[in-house]
Length: 112
Length: 115
Image 1 (cartoon, one colour):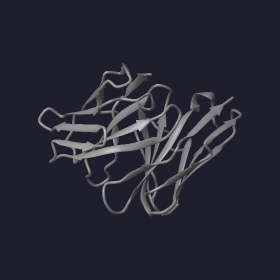
Image 2: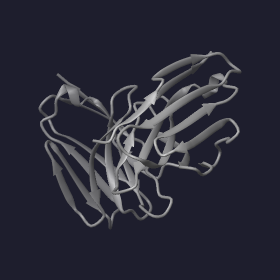
Image 3: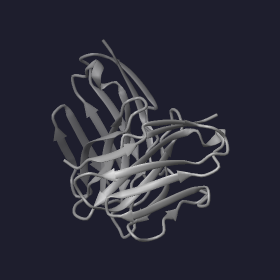
Image 4: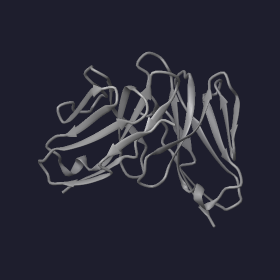
């Protein structure tokens, strides 16, 4: 079952604008990861944030994690049309037998 | 970086036939492999987890006799959809985790269409 919820489900913005996606989860985690998926393709790992971290940056990506609220956000700055894709958060409890549990995803459309 | 090769990328088969999907880790040993299913505009649903040399662990509601998973080596796992039906049409994605660190590497997915 999917434990993550993401909002918004769909987001449409203009090139150059920032895009923010949120993810909430229910159980304890060791880390939370964000993935990108272009239509009909596999997943691309974007960034991982550990439970003892609050914020992480990678290029135009900024991820925050609030374990007290069990939530995370992904910010894409200065968006480009090529950023159009679905974005998923995934939680990893990193216990014996652990596996990723995915959120419902946000479909981002960046209009040129 | 770690690479997982999944093929075929797409397959069309007739109802009642079986289809095998392969997932190979190219430059690392995948102790554990995961198989996901994804319907259009939906998220990934975990079907099963397999450890090399062991029987796969299936998620609730996934028929193990229909979705046969074999993980005979540290670099290869296969998913066989047996007696496929149109409702099995979906996007199937594998993921492999290596022994060290937190990394999960995903295959590029297989689009299965059963006609």
